[in-house]
Image (tube, rainbow, N blue to C red; front, top):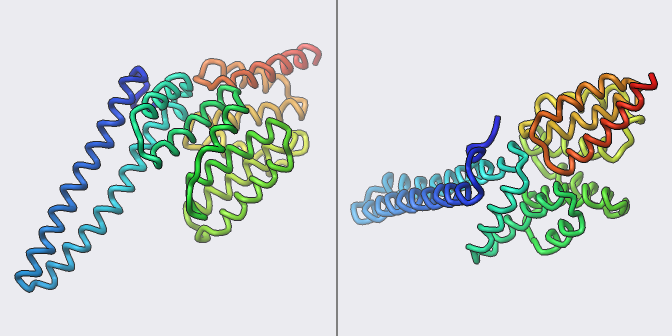
Length: 279
């Protein structure tokens, strides 16, 4: 399923996203004012229960705001992760970056642009961008994304020492999340995914292949499902199942894809077709 921005230009998508963020901010400022007024009135009237309700409402409003903001941000990111439209996402991000002076927002936008660089095959540019961003907090989801991208980039560049350092940092983060929590499970899956990505598919066992099939079937984002399918196709090739690989790689050609994965798909397809013709 595509994003809500699938039929929009980059400019239209950015305008819609910024309106959504502004609307959220206005709504929650008004809610804080209402609950704050409630708390002030309760002080004058001596209604302790009303004062407690006002404070609780303010706290709940802040928590709700950050939850809703994260959902709005995820919708915007789906231009890349669901539509696989790197060019549109890059254009929207660059437009956004030119309109904001907020350090936290600039950090987020540069991280997103680094993902665009990676999917466009611009590894040096992606690493340069990552050197400009800083995310605080030992359990920060954004820091986790930085480490994930660093591991992928260092692997692509052949810097295995730094790749393994980034992977080790992700493992440490995974241990900090509450056991059984959504983030603990997601980070554990990320570690397993990266470990398999950095391992030749010929060395996978059936449990590894089963995990990757689950990712191909259930990963919430289209680009991640494509990545898993490509690795399964490489696994099929390594196991001598060239015709199966040809069928899936050909089918993938009809789906949206980012440039990096499309280039990989074409390389694998050529190899699979050669082996299938020989077989």
